[in-house]
Length: 422
Image 1: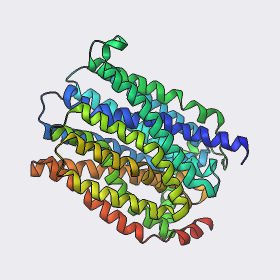
Image 2 (image 1 turned 135 degrees about the vertical axis):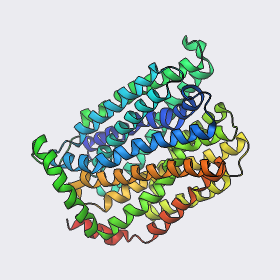
Image 3 (image 1 turned 60 degrees about the vertical axis):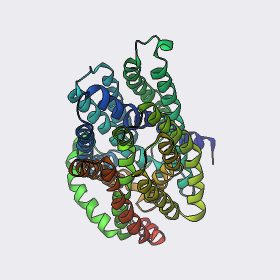
């Protein structure tokens, strides 16, 4: 491989380092804690759990509606990279806006968070669509895993510094831990923008088509219907998308709701943050290892292994009472979380036409976010109806079991042949 290709791959992967700061510091870390303890202070824990689930679901519904059209437009314009950076900057600005939200203003915090999630999720659509363009076909698993590994490392490093700020605010000239958390939102926005620059400078797009923005927008809706027909004509791709929709719902719901669950059952927020750091730093080497497992045994086998671990973690979580148990589960999740995400992306990239990556990844992103609508609502409603956060978290099992069963029925070899004919 040439040095130019290697530079392109590393620059592409560094975007995961950039945007994982949002996923780790904001989405999984400080936002759920700060929302429950600062912006929604005084609200019962079951109600704030329901609010957080609804906020995530509203953002996901908007992304669901936007993703397929955005994917089609990106392919027609040949501007995946430009649209990625546009939405990344939008998400970063909204994240930085959380710095100025005052105590009790949960509605303002929710609105900014929804906008930040829209930017984050939409940018990921175009980031994923660039994978088959920057990576050789026999390196897809490895390159996809590299991105997630750098994401875990970068997000973990920034999160570590932010945690230090909350524990020792006086060292950084801050009045208290609340000021430190708000500053963390601003630093995350700057980190996100700064480390997006290598992708902008060194990743070169290919397979570009010539079209005007207006023609792409009007043609996008027509093309959307055609894309739906194409997916139905690729039965293995279609089957994988349904499986992915189900199991990634469980993964994303655990990412978004784990800290809220820990708080609801009485664990200390410092213990929960420590557990998240453990997940990040275990996830860095584990994602790389899973990339090699996918190359050796097939990505489908590695994903099924990860789903088995998730099922066991979910079952164990309903008996969890102490911080050390949360640490244990965080470490186990760190072993498989990056792997299931990375290999799902690389497996799907094998099952789609290479000249229509953004279009097909629009549906991939749509299903992933539509799943994230179902999961938090499912946990929130079951929690409200049962009056127990433990029963609520157990509802995720259904998603892992159904998703794993459908993934077993995907014929990857046949799916690759079908995609190659397009």
